[in-house]
Image 1 (cartoon, rainbow over the protein chains, first blue to last red):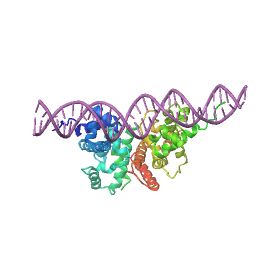
Image 2: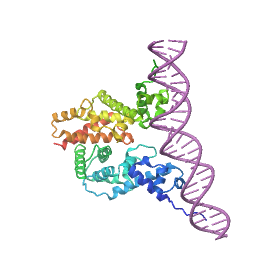
Image 3: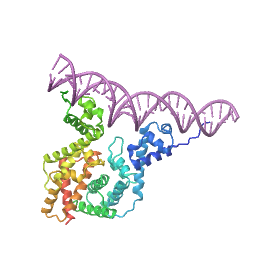
Image 4: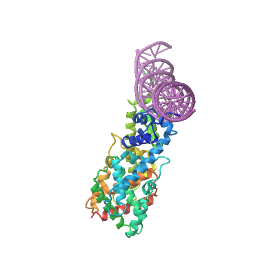
Length: 185
Length: 185
DNA sequence: GGCATGTTATAACACTTGTTATTTTACTTG
DNA sequence: CAAGTAAAATAACAAGTGTTATAACATGCC
């Protein structure tokens, strides 16, 4: 009937996503993706209507990647929000370009930070309940403060203004939680 | 002798800086600056060797703009670092594109966040001394924590994830300072 | 007033981008 | 095996970028 499809959606998306991880989202151009995938630009537009569709797919994949990253990240902290913060800061350090795409670039059509964080598993809600169970009077306010702090540390890793080890970060987050709790009740 | 120079360095830099403030650094291209300045691209390259030189000049101007912004910003806070933070967060809200250029974009040849903050007036050093005078045992550590928090809030304004009023922000920063102090000594 | 000289405008080059028209290729079906 | 058809390659278009060569221009000096 017809020629067999040799370049699949997966191959293109895999390539584009890998390029985003390694070189940044801005490097995902039609010709560069094609070159890395070892084909012309034509299969891309055969599978995706235009580059916007591919870019959206890369964004969705990055969002899913973060969910997975958080899911398997070791839980060393005891206080609420600390494990969420540890994974978040580590993600910013180890996946700079993905972090930038998901949490720094404004961009229309992007999900809110809270939505990305909470994810399908309701990560934030669970942490807030944990804080309430621990006797915190206003866990939402506590989350906001903790999250501002965590986001600040993560963003500073991008510019090289924050460079603490995992152990130091754990200590910093635990102490910060205690600090915020102490003035919250 | 020769034709009088009608398009000056100031006119070009003013235009490029205004474009950065309003539309973002990426919009500062040779043709767009020329169009807005009402001339061809030729005067730009007559005054600057290339676009990199102009971009550097815009960056320097943005850095100076932030210094001025901080200098005249009202001092409503009592605790150390709070006024620095208030001005910083307000700058992120009111000058999104300049904030992005100075404090979010990594880019080579850019100054460190600390250098931009401390400025010519030694803002950070003064605040640290103030904290020490107030009886803080480790003012540098306190500054780091406060700054992570402040930077987090500022960065979240860019993505629309932080939107507290000036009064609320003042309260938040004062309380955060108390929180960090309480676990610091 | 003519003229040399520095400034500006015009136009073009080389490159990159997304996108599309056209051609080639290869595979499945009859 | 031949034919038709879907996929991929080639090539081109239009727009945008930095940069530069060339031409027009105005201005102060002799």
